[in-house]
Length: 122
Image (tube, rainbow, N blue to C red; front, side):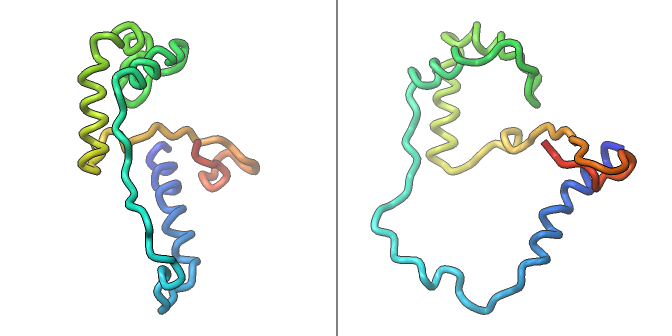
């Protein structure tokens, strides 16, 4: 059943994209030339530490299975390497594949519960 949900939810975006008519025109033709360069600002240890300390400890773990209580309690020790990892990602524009994963829960919309099309991903 889980694989059926995965297949259905994964196909939704492709189905939507197929419904958009193709255009021969350049989609950027009306965009003005950029006047400023875009870049992310690096984060500092204080910001990372504050966010770690704000973690809600009664929430479920993420894909990494690391309890938020552990992250919160170890914040003073892990803040320096975490800050380095975040800034390295921002500077290189590379995001680890593990950060791109998510846990999706199917939520029933209406109709029969046997059809995956009657669920939405959350």
